[in-house]
Length: 383
Image (cartoon, rainbow, N blue to C red):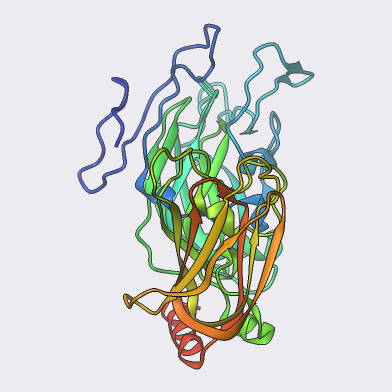
């Protein structure tokens, strides 16, 4: 955990996640992130289930007078331009609501239960391990507190469906104080599968970004109907369990949907100055039979890995190499059909000596045991 600034308040006894409260100083020029408050939240090693690239969206909000709700899912840090004003006021890179008022001159203050809300559709259903409510550049106009709820509904429910009195939301984050110009992180310990999240700010204000970290839990019925699919893909429930180097980019990029669109939309390591090699270890959606492999180096033109190999194992068993060390070309999608299908629960890609790949695809199908285990977990998580 990184050292925290003096303005950070201590974490609650039951949590290892630091918390921040209160205003940040007014912007005084220079780097707008110089006094930004943040920490290394442990749950950010999981995938962001609220990633637009996965298909996430902000489907409704009760108010977005100053800044659009969709901004909270934009990739990357919020941008701040101190000179940018519009006809409604300061243009902010986030979601910002108007100031709430009381009912009369005698009671001009918002009521204790006044609040604004936004509904998020997760890009992939899953178990949520942590949430970050980022108030970057909202220094005196951030919410006093936030709360987070989630629900699992089938299909593609409308905002009206989600707001129905029949829908029972599960609280992930109780109403909690937050700080301005800070990454406010909250660990979540609820073993359920969710499809939608409701972010509530009390009583009003602005939020720059929202990140919802967790593990994808795909629908076994859908995967069964597909038959052959990518058994390591993030959207199907694949997961990165470890990597040798994360200097330039997250290893999770290698199993994101679609082809890479630019160099940093893949996995790239620093330059090695020894005789070692770099690697990523993955957990498959469940035990699977793999029949074909793709290793893509799209947009990695002078820094692609020179060679790669693929190994498979079941549980904690020994690794079996299924694709021997093979020469890779820059900015190229490489396809391999296995002579003998490989069965396992985990995969590992080794690259030599360093560099990067943009995507790894492992095409196959669930074994009978894998399908049974996935269905059991799906049921256990309340769906």
